[in-house]
Amino acid sequence: NDPNNAALPAYRLNPYISYGGGIAYIDAARVQVVDSNVTGNFATIGGGVYGDGALASTFTDSNFADNVAFKGGAIYAVDGDDWTIENSTIVRNQALRPGGEGGGLFIASSPLLVFDSNISSNEAAYSGGGVYAAGSGFLPAELHNNLITHNIATRDGGGISANWHSELIVTNCTIADNEVVAAPAYGGGIFTAYGARVDVTNSIIWDNVSRYDGTQIGVGSGDPRYPQPSSMSVSYSIVEPGPNDPNAFGPTALDIVFMIDSTGSMGGDIAAVAAAAGQITQLIGSTIPDFRIAVVDYRDFDTPGMGGPGDYPYRDVVPFTRNVPQVIAGLNTLAAGGGGDEPESVYAALMHCMNPTRLETDLTAAGAAAFIQPASPGIGQWRPGQGVARAIIVMADAPPHDPEAFVNYTLADIVDEARSAPAPKQIFTIPVRGTAQTLQYFTALAQGTGGIMIEAAASADVVDAIMEAIRLMAWVPPAIYVENGCQLSGWDAAARVWAAGLYNIEEDPNFVYGYYLAHLDTGQDINSPAIDAGSASAADLGLAAHTTRIDGVFDAAAVDMGYHYRKGVDRYELKIQIVEDPLNPGIHGRTDPNGGWFYDGTVVKVR
Image (cartoon, rainbow, N blue to C red; front, top):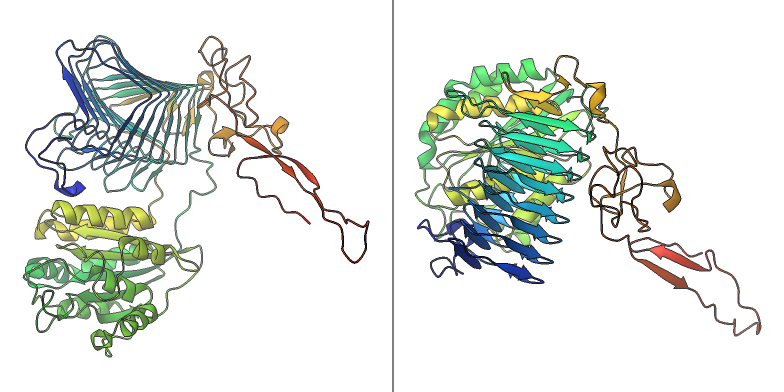
């Protein structure tokens, strides 16, 4: 690891330049890494590996995990020649601010080939949760037969982001369950901008998330002042439905809480909100007419080392009401005071908004009942039901105590409470003048609860951020977003359909056991539409010794769409021996089933 960074928390990486926390090589060097672990490293650029101008290098059967950088959490490859990553895992790496690009991989002007690999659960503070590509090279980079899942970016390209005239070929990849979490944010699955070109074939783009535009695909130009239109082609692929998606409907009712940090440094922000209270409530009413609004403010626990006299961990200003004048009056009573330090009691106030009984019980159990606010018993019951949007907008300039004082709530506790039935809630966060630590926590709160983080650089931006959050509560983002002047070949944006000759499919791929494909021959009750639906034979694409089936039967004939595993799911034999009844010798009884072979993870009920 770089010595400047070795013992620092992730959000406090040293801003001074350092390269390759685990491995660094430059200037025509060649590296071969086989059957290795590159884990837990830190550097400014290339948390695990940094290569600049390197010649043919290979990384095979290796694991890149838990590395952290500003750019290229696991691997940063720039101006390289013939890099190959094969049968490797790139998981749980991070690209943090101020760079925030390429949580897993950062590919810069390099003809990098990645195949048979798992790029999952990586995070980027800005772009390319799994993969970020930038810069033109003499050959395009290629992602062939990779599993790209559960990656997160704040701004664009939860799975993949291609920018700055890069060229990227994506074949037989499954790009699923990735997410972009801020606003604006584009391309939960894959995004391209700044003159880049991406070609996708034989792939599955499914169940990715953006709450702004382009849940699956985003094609943009970059900076609106100096646009550089990008392009993408998609063929022989499954892309999540757009116009016929049965989940594409918005809420019919809204319960919303404004939870505001009222410490002294928030004075200008509170004044801005109060001045725009009528405008804010009018937007709520026009967006979702069936609404209720509550207002809560908080500072900190009035105890040495935290808050000071007059501070409080939470306070009800307005309980749930449809009375708009009451809400406006309540917002105008807010006054900033106290503070002067951080963190603040964010988690206690959130728990009060969601479950005041739990907070009071936990404070009492911790011997801290003195901090219970008798005049603030709670904002009222949240309305249950699928048609009700339930949201908390947190506006603050300081991070939470983690764990929270006295009650020891952590981020996970708050997220779990927000997601609990029967009335799960989304947390929309508006960090004002936020530090890296504040942004990290507020992004995680939004991400974990299905909300969005919208950063406000100054008091003048606060009202716009609130208005944007309200609009997004009712917004149903399209699966595919194409900015004016950009091109997604064969996509009719008006009719929202693909050209017939592209052979794209808008049907559920029916994943089983992770991202294998359902098949009648392996016990599922349906065949995935991805089976035998690709552009060429499995042999021609180098996948004849790979499988999409849980039983491990290799792909043959026309290639299946999406990622191919090297083997099927493990099976185990269940043997049942019934002992003799001691009261009735010779009688052993029966079970159903009485044994058999079962796939790993199968729950077998024996009767």
